[in-house]
Structures are given as structure tokens and as C-alpha cells.
Image (cartoon, rainbow, N blue to C red; front, side, top):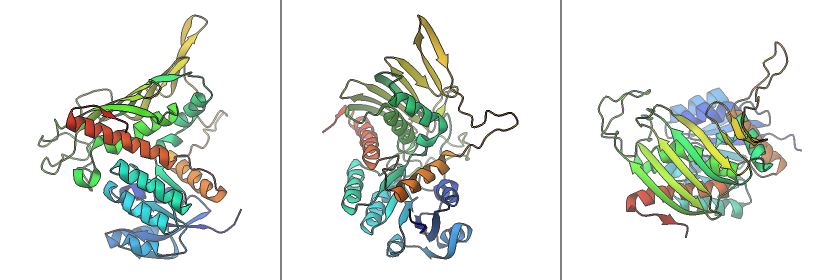
Length: 361
């Protein structure tokens, strides 16, 4: 393995870049961040000062950043509407690409990204960090070992009682493509399909609601939203049928009058056992004519006076992504999988708009 460090450029140095990408890349010794781009130059300069290698460059135009032939990898941390444009340009410029979720606003854009990755020979992955949680990763091993049997029913859950993001362009339908469904529902759906290993959908029926967004002075952890700027849904739901007969119900909301809430969770029901994340990871089934519930111990410790070291999903995501590049292996999140997630989200919106089921073409 080469001792050369991978040079990484960051496009978009806002909340998700500062909250996940840059601090976790900084923990990877094989990486140095050498280019930072943001429409707000001061924000890019701050990122370069905090995370940049000596001599790092700052840009306000991502196309100028991509001209840097020394860059090996680009992380795209920008609003949804520019994901495809920027990812395709980066791939064509010969860079490996990590793009934040959701993959794109539309399925056409998502599959164009897949095609660009194949043509370039570079790796493309999407930032679904919930696959890298200890509970998710353990359950994936359980599912792949066949311990749940055939998983024929599931719920994908991303439900907030109140949790409307009021900054950036989250409330702008034109730039985001949607609200909670495309923002957090995408995490729950990705996690569920990955655990089921089922991407062959057949039909989608969706409902989208804009019932609470017009409220003035609403209770919200980030302060009241502006009803005039709130152009996306406040909740959305989908009923998804797969070619093998399996069914997934997707529930998503930023604002819903419900007490039991939770994000990036799912419930799986198989012929041999089931699983959920309602009280930590729980696996349920039947043995010797008795029902059982087990909770695997996912703590890193196990030794007296030592709690163990538990890394964040964001760091594990970055670590596995960099390892995939260095070792020339597939990333954990394949772009084809992420494109199917985008297809289904798009179908839910279309079904809700037309009041008809959407069938896989």
C-alpha cells in the first residue's frame, strides 16, 4: 500500500461538513484536506484554517477546485439540488466522490451519477452513516446469516414530533426536492433496504401532508419556522411493494402530533425472527414453543473499570470509505443502492401528487 496521503477537497463547508465530514476525515492519518469551497468565502477560510493541511486552497467556485489535479477525493456537502451536477463534474475530473444524502433530487440525476462513476472508473458513495452504527452493523450480519429468515414485512421510521430545520434551504422545495421524506426518511429507507438486501421494488403508494407548516410561533427545537418560507411537506408516508411480495411502510415527519418518535430506525419481520430498534436492538422469535426477546450487548467494554472505545458512525463511515479507496474495494454504500432509494422517494412524491400508485417502469 502506498504511503502517499489522499488529498481531499470539500465542496460545501456548512453544517454537515463541520458536523460530520471534516472532523472525521481529520482523524484518518492517510488523509489531508487541501481544498475547501463554499459560496461564503469566509466559511471556506474558517474550514481551511481549522482542518486544512499547510498550503490549503480556498474557493468559491467548485469548478475551480476540481481543476486541482492533486486532489484524489471530493466530499460534496451542499444542498440536494446541486448534488448530481457537482458529483458528475468531480467524477469526470478524475476524483473519487463521497456525496451527502440524499443522492439527488430525482432518480434521473441519481442514475446519471451512477453512469458517470462507471465511465470514470472512480468510486462513488453516499453519506448514509446509519449503516455504520454498531446496532445496524450487527443486525446486518444477523440478516445476512439468514437468522431472520425471509424478511417479508418492514417499517422504515424517521418520525419527529417536532424537529423542523429552519436554517439553510431545508424549507425550500425547489432546492431540496422535499421535506422530511427526502431529508430523514431517506436514512430510514436506506437502512431498511440494506438490511433486507432487497432493491427490487414493484409499486409505491404515497401520501404527503402539509398540515402543520402554516402555524405561527410553533413549538420547535430550533425556534419557530416561518410559514411563508415553509414550502415542503411536514410529513410523508409510503407503502412499498417488492417483486418478491415483501412490503415496506415508510413513515417520515418533521412535525406530527405523535408521542413515540425516532429516526433512522426500522422494524423487520421475517419467517424465523424479527428485529427492531425500539429499546436498543432487539431480536424476537420463537424457540421450543416459547416466544423470546434478546438484546445483544453492543458495548465495546466487558472488562472491569474499562468502558471500551466506541467510535461514532460518522468516523466509521469515513474510515471505511478511505479504506475502500486505498484497498480498491467497494464502498459500503453502493451508488446503485442509493439510486433505488431516490427512485422510491420520488415515487412516493409522485403518487401523492397524482393520487395513484406508481409502478416500476
